[in-house]
Each structure stands twice: as C-alpha cells, then as structure tokens.
Length: 129
Image 1 (cartoon, rainbow, N blue to C red):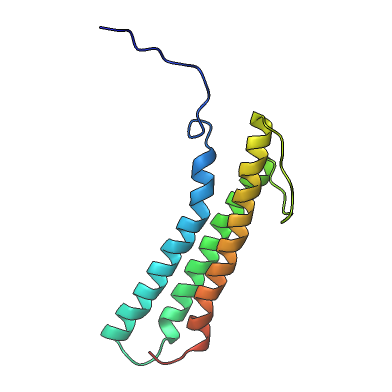
Image 2 (image 1 turned 60 degrees about the horizontal axis):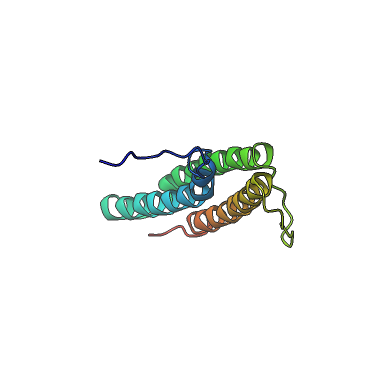
C-alpha cells in the first residue's frame, strides 16, 4: 500500500480566511429571514400593527451591525483590509493574499450593513401588516 504524503503547504481554511468572507453576508441573510419571519408570525397571530415587532427587528439589526462591525475590525487588523474601492492588489505572496481577503471582507461587511439598513427600513416605515 503506498504511503500517503502530507504536505506542509498552508491551506486557506486553516489560516481562518474563508470564514470572514462568508460571515457578514450570512449574518445579513439570517437577519433578513428572522426579521421577516417575526413580522409574518406577528401579523398572522396578533394582526393589526407592527408597533411591537418593530423594536425586535430594530434591536436585532443593531446587534447584527455590531457583530459585522467586529468582523470589519478583524478584517482590518488581522488581514490588513482597507476601504478603497479601486485598490489594485498585485502581490503574489501570502501577504498579498491576506490583504486581498481583508479588502474583500471589509467591503462585504460594508455591503451587509447597508443591506441590514434596508431590511430595517420597512419595519420603521409601515405601521399596518
């Protein structure tokens, strides 16, 4: 039976880079599902106004924005992400890869915060179910 060789090459998932790319959009998706689920259940059971679940949705949005902000801080500190939209990253090294991951993660954090803002707006604007 041939011997299986294990190489010491670093893997992207081992260094913790992949989770930070999917975390912020996943938090936004969870906020989207939970907030609309809360509103749908409230309207089906209690009916009438959205005055009470409005604050649940807003509080959940604030919590999600805080967690995404923490992820943005990690993207800046650990991976060297900067908020420049047209930055060109041409380094072909581990540092260049980390900088790219940090840049993309930071932009995804900003996009997710904006998306959560758009999820909260209907709860603040509409009064009736």
